[in-house]
Amino acid sequence: MSIDLIPAHSVEVIPCASDPRCFRWVIRAGGGTVVEHSPYAFVTQNGARISGECWIREHFADGVRG
Image (tube, rainbow, N blue to C red; front, top):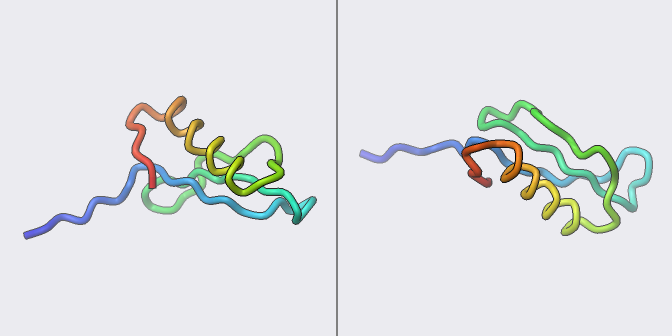
């Protein structure tokens, strides 16, 4: 018997609504609910992803990444 675990939090990188050339991160709980979003835009997708992953490590004790 296997148990599928849902990550506690995951980072989603999305285009910025005000400037589609930039990106923002969204942190979602395991069920998909948005629990946090980036306060500003990033020039690259990778920059937004790294920032979001750091935010998870710093602000959520479990540190699980999706």
